Structure formats: structure tokens, C-alpha cells
Length: 235
Image (cartoon, rainbow, N blue to C red; front, side, top):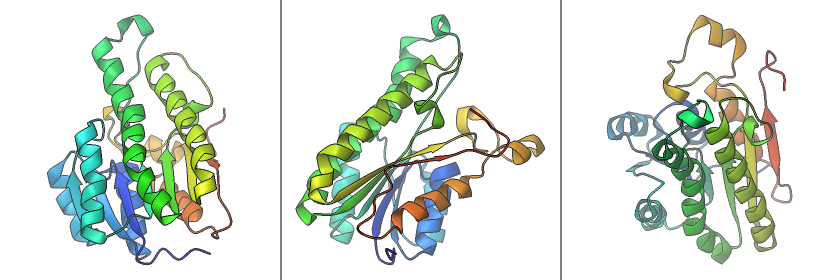
């Protein structure tokens, strides 16, 4: 089993929900966590608990994504884990989507993953190891009405990660895609904690435990893909 103590881990979308749960659990396992999000106040509160580094950034901007990697290397001298968790979504009939909303979803979900991986991979290659985890969605494997924009972005993110997996495997770099089903978070401007969601949804901590499982696999093992659903949800 791989020991996460002193592993340097970037977690994006870390100010709340799944990202926050991942950051807290990795810190509990002894990792040095770099929490990345756009909300400075929520990041500051999280960093008090993780005792790590917080970076305010928009992962859809190339300069911000590069600075996340550069500042991590400047502060810790290396990078071991990149968790691409930042994501947004909205749902509507196709003709009611604006191009601005389409771009917002793709910029965060797809471009953000691309930019962070692009900045991190050269360093992983130089050290001949590293682990990239993409928190995507079960809708990367299925479609549904009103999900044209979000679903298309998750299909694209999944393809990006799957192709990258083949590129970097010869360099000792692992790439894992995690596909959560329904999770009780702030996603799509909902408020978590309702009685109904507690009965039917996964918790952010469930996804964090999946990340821990993937990262703690022995060095010779890579979990390429991992899908999680609540018992109440079927395909």
C-alpha cells in the first residue's frame, strides 16, 4: 500500500463539497495539500484545518493553472498528486442554452483539466512518477434529457483523461477517472443536507474515500476507472 504521508497533492474545487472532503481526508492521511478554488474566504477556512497551502485561482485561465503548479513547486519543491475536481453544470433544453453558459461549463470541466494536466505532466515526467485523478461523473458514460452541455463536457473530459492515460503510462505516471453518481453537494446551486438527499445520494466523503483508495494502491497497480453510485440510483 502506498503511504500518503508528505505526498504533495493539489486539489481543485476545494472550497466546498467533494473537493473539500478530498482535501480534508488527504491532509488527515499526512499529505501536504494545496487547496485551489475561486472563493478566498472558504479556502482560508479550509486551510486552517488542512495546515496546507491555499491558492485562489480560476483553473479555466491558463495563467492561473500554470501558477498553481509553479507555486506548488516553489513552496514544496515537488508535486505528487493532481486531483482535477473543479466542475460546474447546469441543465436545460438545448435551445435554451446560451453560448456563454456552454462556454462556462466547458471552460471549467474540460479546459481546466487540460490546462492543469498540461502544466503538471512535464514535472511528473521528470520525476518518473505522479498521479492524476479526474473527478468526472457517471454522465461521462450515459446521456439524459436536458444534459446536453454538462454531459458533453463530461464525455470530453473523460476522453481527455483516457487518452492522457495512454500517453503518460510509459513514464510511470498514473491517470485515474472517478465517476460519481448522485452526490449531496452544492452542485447546480443546490443546498446539501436535505432529508431526501441524505436518503438517496452519495456523500462528498464517499468520493474522498474513493480517492484515498486509488492513491493508496501499491506502486505497481493503477486503477484506471472507478464508478460509484448510491444504492438508490440505477443507470
